[in-house]
Amino acid sequence: MKKLVAYITSGYPEKSFSIDLALALKESGVDTLELGVPFSDPVADGPLIEKANHKALELGFKFKDLLEISKVIAPQVDTLWMGYFNSFYQHKFDKTLQKAKELGVNGFIIPDLPYEESLIYNDIFNSKELANISFVAPTDTEQRIKTIVKDSRKFIYLVAYTGITGSGTAENLQPIITSIKKYTQTPVFVGFGVNKKTAKEKVKGADGVIVGSAFVEILLNENLSYNEKIINCSELARFLKSEINS
Image (tube, rainbow, N blue to C red; front, side, top):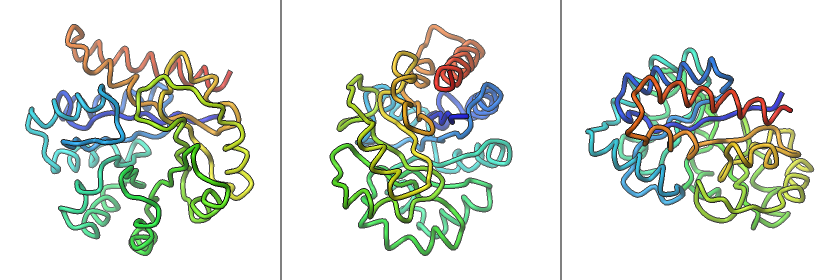
C-alpha cells in the first residue's frame, strides 16, 4: 500500500479548524500529516502555500498554536513539523526537538537546512528518536544521492522537479528513484506538483506521494464554509489514496 502525506498550514484559518481537518484527513486515508509552520518567507513553497502562510500570520499565528494543535493530533496521526529553520532555531533548537518529542511528533521537514549543515544536528535528532527528512533532487549526482540517503529515516523526500511547490512541471523520475533505491531501503515519497491529475504518474516506482498545494487551495477558498473545506479535503484525500494504489 503506497502512502499519502498531506500538508496543511497550521492555524489557518484557525487552530480548532486545523485540529478538525487533521483528524478528518486521517480518517480519509492520509498516512502522515505535515503540519506547516507559517513563516514570512517560505522560499521552497509556491504562491498558494505562501499565501496561506501570510494569512495565518496576519491572523495572529504563534508558535504556541503549533504546540497546542500537535498536542491533540500527534497522538492520533503520524505528525511531522514542516517549517523553515529559523522558526525552530529561534525557540532554541534542542528545546524545540524535545518539545516535539514530548508531544508525540515524529520528525521534521526543513527545506532550507542543507544536508551538510544538518549534520551537526544529527546527534540531537537521533537522541530524541526524531526523523530529519532527507531531500533528494533530480539535479543531485549519484555520489551525492548515496551520501544523502545513507542516514535517511522515515522516508526520503524526492523533489519532483527543480522549483517550488505547486508547479505543474513534469520530469522523468524513474532514473533517480532507481538510483536512490540502490543505496537505501528507506521509502521514497515524491513531492512538488502532486495533485489529482499527476498523482498516479508521480508515484510510479516510488512508495508514496506528498501533497500540499492541492489541499491548501481548498483552504484558501473563501466561498466554502469550514465544514465544506473539511469535506472537500477529505474527498481529495480519498481520491488521491485510491489513485496511487490503483
